[in-house]
Length: 391
Ligand code: SIN
Image (cartoon, rainbow, N blue to C red; front, side, top):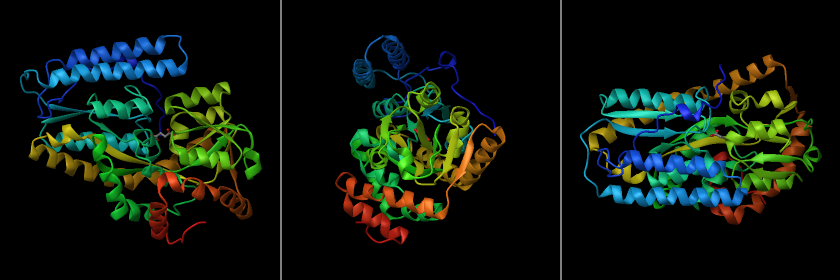
């Protein structure tokens, strides 16, 4: 497995803000909208302003771009070209999500005979975690695969149920849930937010890393942990007496390196491809949670595709999903082997008693987040896992 981090932004071709018309036709104002967005984004990011102000300004740029986009919808159409699907994601290409995205590109272009061109932008080269969902809703990109943990800020809190600690014993159980009525019902929640959910993609199970050896619940006391924007993960670390800090995935390596945070939780493939193992002395095998993705498209874009194109893209998505989910576990195993080989991180294995103590310490989270995620949903998922309600 090779590592690839952070392709330089300046090398990216960001041409086109395609398909705001929703009919598969490029819009003449697309280039300027995208450019305005990019220029504004870079300008605001470089301003020495407090984080809150920067985020506020960023939102203004996004909405300004959206306003121009709204005008563009009524504009005349340009000559036909391939339909562009911009697929933005935040991890390395050499990960379960990165490989599934590349497979979708290959198959969608093949099955549509080139009527569709998929541009995959890995490693947050286009947008970071939170921005990418806003960009999708506005039509600046067409496809994403954010983790379940990142939908909370859109108002959809239910996907955070997958963050409950020690919820899933294995990937087969997960599959039963996502392929069944619960998974289908969750996808419908996206529609009101301008998104269509197409598939569930795996990454794998999370492990804990830090510069301190983490063996028992008390070891987490007072440590700062980077987390994704999930209130369930927030509750998990607070239950352990740690201090959670929401941070974009692209910023984690540096935050660990500089000591802004003490640790983080992630899958082996994410840890390895972001080189986190180079700046973390210990990684504890906890498998305490799961990282998986919801593949989403801009709903207007998707509904506006010619039916034959959409059908072929759906076929490509189905096959890319089977491909990705079929190799995610192996990807993570390979990444762990590479981390061991690199020899910079001590891999800590818990005894059954230590594992049990961790599970017990995290159980209060189920109650803490029940009103946010929904007790009925939690119970439905627990039933699928073969466990009864947790009180
Ligand atoms: C991802 O796998 O997409 C990112 C996970 C994270 O933000 O930790």
